[in-house]
Image (cartoon, rainbow over all chains, first blue to last red; front, side, top):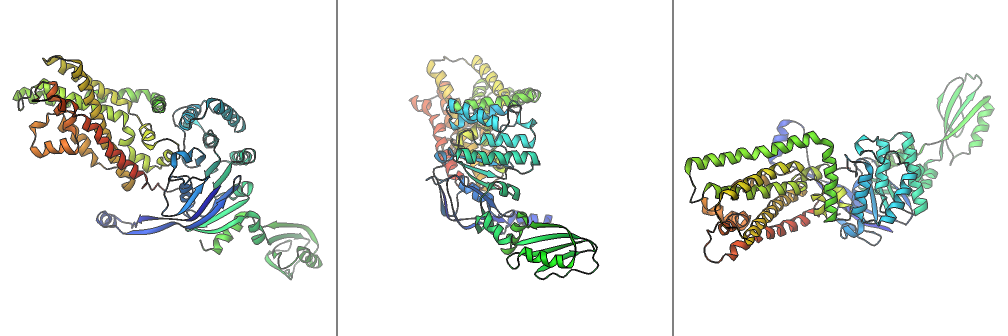
Length: 325
Length: 260
């Protein structure tokens, strides 16, 4: 469905230094440096997948999305989406895709949402019949009835984002690019947006490429993640593989009846310790949890045991660290 | 074309949200060009005529070019303020929609308050025609309309060229105003009052002379020889759009977008 091969893009960025004097100098003579936004990126995405595209700020996520949606022309490499090369056959290609930029609106600011939708219908030449049924479905599932008559500028961020997503689906695209769709949303809106994304993927088979900094988005939606840093592709695989790799580290928190001596447990590292409570970290690839618990119970009288896996957020941080980005 | 109408309707609805500001702007746009016209009036009051051109004749010249300018400011405002569209990244949105970029940029903005300017130039046009002693024919009316259309094309072409520069510079270039404002100021007088090189520049490079001066000679019966070339001269203005649009489509490929 989507095939990206050897994609590279570099920007020429003017070096900026502080101070008025330096700024004056820059007026006449400028030094440039080349920033490699994308460096030999390749991947393929099948129809119906939800892919989380992650990486720190400035890693090249947005640039990739912009190349895939036909906004930018890469320096090298090829990209085909449904048989189209996005930047070559732009007009025919973009009929099949929807794009949501979380930080920018695609709606007309001063008019009711419905008016924006109507204009989008004309822009995309959606047949009236189809438009009406799609709109009815979107209105119902995204709960837009009450806000659809309001001008966009009066909407809250969460309401607006629901409208943005609806707007990008009016022409029933096969691929949906979501660039930070949950940025700045409250917990309730986030969950609503996630549920909806999942639903259109399952019911309509829409392929979804999602960039985000919120790992909960990834956990709730994506089965596969692509990690990019400093323009390079660092990881491409399932979320479970990452879990298996970094999820072997467990944290055991134990509460026990008063015990004055420091704990010493073979196979576990004591992170913190007090007379009633201790936190230990264990690598399950080295030692079995039950072993540790047996050893613990031999030393103290256990009152409570909690075992936690490393949060996905921390796993990603580990991954970033590993690649030094 | 139908879609363009819908874009405009949308912008009109938006504009009507701010009615007071609309009326004030329109009034301002109506009054400002009068000071320019008053300057013209006092000039002729003092000197009587310039190189054989009467005040009324120059007024006709003046109104045609101002009307073209007002119209192109209305319709091509999207190109005129294109640097903001590039600067805030909204051009990304234009590129992910399945319509031509030119149409979408034209539809991104419409300056309704320029109706004031338009009314002012209509007023002067009406006055000039009423003062001039000339026999109007259907053909002459057509040539007059042709001149205005052609003028709109030239101004729009310059706006498009200036907008194209934004693909490389991101910020707008005031230098283009030399050709829009400057061109308008020059072309509001008959071209033959200027130096030779000015006349050549505004005939062959940016063909203001072809939309205004040359056909005006025909309208006022000052042309010599065959009338046809004078009547068809405004075609040059429409032809001017072609290289501008080519430059534009070349520029779009150089679009660099802005950060995330």
